[in-house]
Image 1 (cartoon, one colour):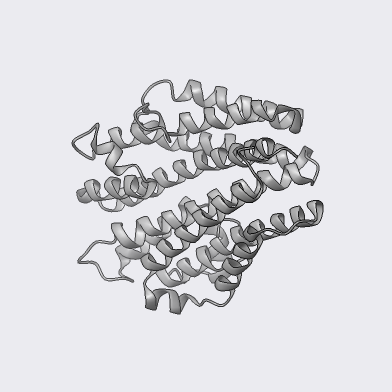
Image 2 (image 1 turned 30 degrees about the vertical axis):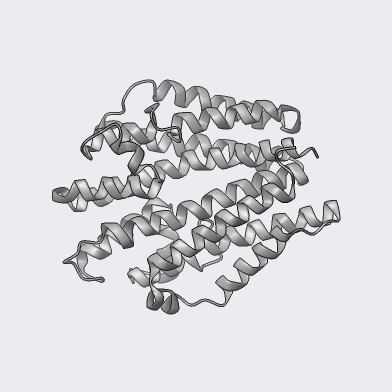
Length: 313
């Protein structure tokens, strides 16, 4: 496969996943804001910080108004990583690799773009936000479903999946960081009723509330939820699950091409580190510090994959 085709698939599915993850990040901030109506400034500032666009936002706005932040993340042109823009980028990449995709995947991607273009053609009102965020998640899910149901399990599929799980691991880490490092009230101890409500909202924002309860019943604790989202390989949005899938898909590429690259070693090292890590050790060291190191390693892995498979050639 040409490097440009591999890169097009990789970024197409990164952008699709990013659109859904931005919606989930907004939902996390929105839900937490409902539990702390007097501190909305902090919640939305932290959401922007986690999305990596806080400084850019402040170049265009002088306050963390809820409607302005939501509009900035969903559709404002001043933000190149808004949902509408990344969906268009996903579609553009899909057009570049059209011959590598099944008809169903292309049609689902095109439908996703058309639906969200229409929905986000105007600012989203607060009362409509849950429905709009649900639509973003649904449209992303339809493309993934078409990929799973119609594509050969070959190098095309593997590059698409690697892009998906790199982006998803990044998002889960960032959503955890929003809660723990920024949104926790300074005067509220970990484990208080308010703190637990906020942690549960984070769990719900990644679609893991029911699964967590199946495993743990009503024992909802910050450490339990963090362990679930970082180390539980059964949770499809956990960091461990995502790194495991990246390692698996890289392994298939190694067999198909007969070549082993530095990115394989990096992924193995990351997976091994997670396997030998306990949640107690993470909290003792500091969850925020763990997340920063993980995000740095993940970015390095993504860059290594791009270089090893010559995405620019």
